[in-house]
Length: 68
Image 1 (cartoon, rainbow, N blue to C red):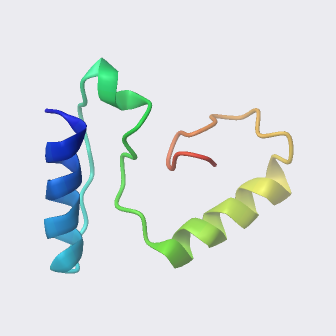
Image 2 (cartoon, one colour):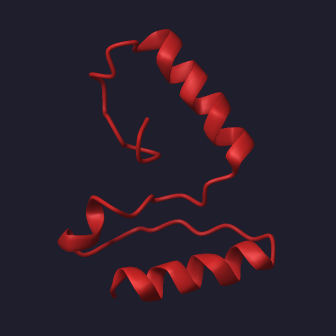
């Protein structure tokens, strides 16, 4: 699976207000693929919680969302 196909699948799922969770992904996609569908509000909440408990971002960086 390449990034274009993954992006198209995510767009379809988002359009239908669904969610997608990646269970297994190829090595070349790991750095660029979030394992969960990203809801902007939940992302911000997660980011603030992460910042409060781990301000140096040393525990599991990018585990749930890229950038957190």
